Image 1 (tube, rainbow, N blue to C red):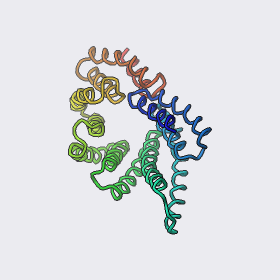
Image 2: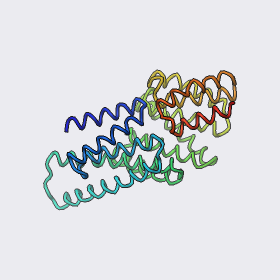
Image 3: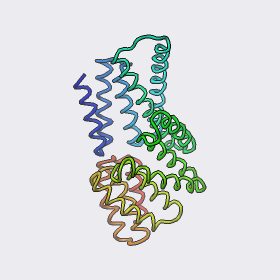
Image 4: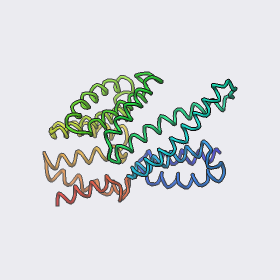
Length: 289
């Protein structure tokens, strides 16, 4: 069991460092071993399946990830409902059983978060915003308004609200700016979630028709992300892409175009040739030809 856990942690470390396709490949191999050694329905097998669904989505397979996540949610909800029923009948539970129940509740929140995300990325931002708003209410009730999980649900609700159109963006940008103050207070200025809120303020500022302010915000953020996450972290690379694109289109055509060209091998290595962001970069390069 210790070896299986170490393989899972290794896959997540590799994915978090930017190689999502390698993480997915490692977890897929691990799932087969978990099914053989532990069984199809063991908790740890389900944990690995959750990882596969997550990295499938990160690799660009939002539709497939959404269905994988939906199936896992049904399994977790069924198990937790059964455990709650046993508790209501006054049955005793040992420490390991209680720990498993607590893990199940945390996993349920993560799965609901993932399902909302893949729903939005599969093309339904309105439903994604609704799911995230519901998750935020439940998380705030369970963990409190300043819990990192609550702040993340607020962030994602604002993102998918903004994705619904111009009128919604005005509301969402106000929500992002209020959230940024809370992220600074709770998580600090260098936390990935704080940096992500700044990214979305810049992104939706451009969508509102102010590319010059967006360029300034993205440029400042790129420095902070490089310092906090490293040059080849996926978020840093996306940030660099936006800086180069906005530089090409609004301040210095030649410098921006060169920046996009220089990003191409990094995108192919970190995201993979078929990832939506790699394809987006190729389209931008083609548009500049």
